[in-house]
Length: 114
Image (cartoon, rainbow, N blue to C red; front, side):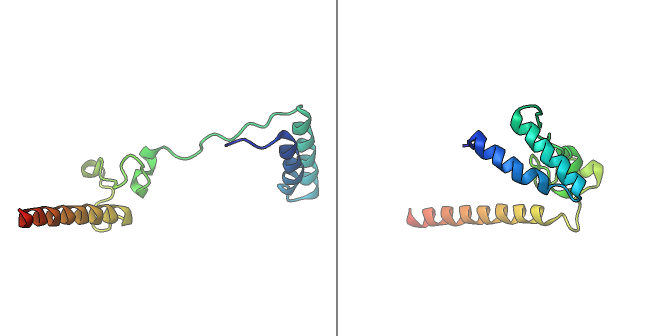
C-alpha cells in the first residue's frame, strides 16, 4: 500500500534524511530544523509536480508513450526519418514482422492439417 508507513516512522525518517540533504553545516542545520517543524505539524512540505516535458516535446527522442515509434507527424516535421529511426522503431518493426511470420506459419499448418 502506498503511503502505509506509520507517522512515527515518517518522523524518524525525516529526522535522519532531511539533514543529509545539506552540503554545508548551515544547510544541514536548516534542514534539521525543517524536519522538526514538519514533525511538529508547523510546516507542510508539498510533493513536487510532474516536471517532465510534455510528450509532444519529447517525440523526437522516441519517448512519446502514445506514439512509441515516433511516426506521427513524420512527413511534415522531418523527425525520426531514415536512416536511424531509432532502436525503439526498429524493435517495433521487428516485432511486427515476427508476428506476421508466426501468423503465416500457423495458417500454413492449419491448411496442411485440413
